[in-house]
Image (cartoon, rainbow, N blue to C red; front, side, top):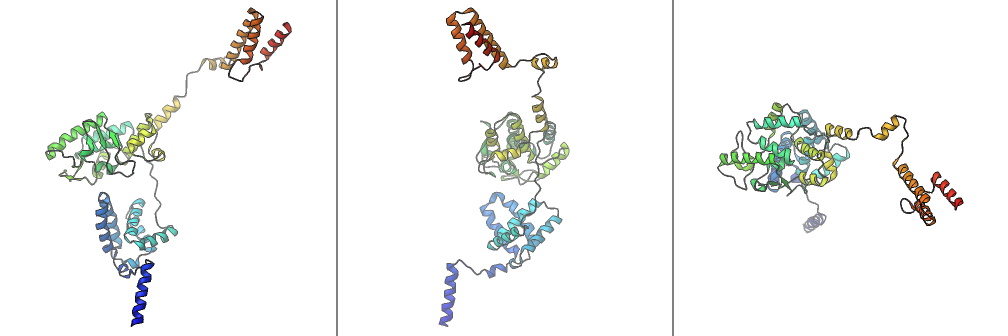
Length: 395
């Protein structure tokens, strides 16, 4: 008994020293149980993205909830991907859901991630969606449709997107404390990038008027405006809780696009602003400060110089035919600027030689050699050389 107890204690010490734990009791738990614990912790640590995490984990629990952790392998993940593809889920969405699955599995998920990457099964191929920039006519139709929409949110939200370039999450979590109608600017709180957090964006005249009108409706709806309240409050079909932000604008945006007969994404409003700033000649640093970009490469990804601007730029290089072009077309001799300068210099030199004395001749000869930039002479001209040789013989 003493030897058995000693061996057990030695094994415990070795496992503790090597950081090896016996997790067999964890492996017999179901995905549903582990998913609930993961979401509870995630909501405390990441409240801003807890809703999205809940959607992703719910799909994992729906399809794999009854599976025990010990039964999960590469084939299980592949089957999950296939089922979600059959449900017409986007590859990018499926990749996010698989990422949550592997994270809630802990160390076992890390090992499974390595195996999936080795077999090239970790991520589905995502189609790189090329954003667009709405033209002036599309923008006018969208703004007109937003003004007539039943949703009180969609018009001010559209104006913010088109005139500040705020991302969807930045706009939905915007509080009145971040909007200064006196000095006409707004500040961004939490952002996708470090460069985006805390940036300030001025309000142009159109957006300022839209927010003033919206604030009047807001005050009438809730009786007052508190700094900590959200600009776009929670509630459907009518907002009723200003202490919570709106979760989505998808329905209002879908209806707006149908009425305006426009195809595109909400994020393309951000593309539109950045493109318009680039076409108007705004500097890269100014655009990055407004949009909250980190690098010029990301700025290039968002800026779509439209066909009209490209065509105008190419047309601008076509100038009216100059006099020299007309002379060429008429078979007339054409003289370049350099030839005109040299001929003028030669004529002045000859005049100096004819009307000046000996001292003047010496000065004229010197001026011929030193004409032009420092260290450069014009004595290679045959007419000048012939005149100098004649001048020497005459002297």
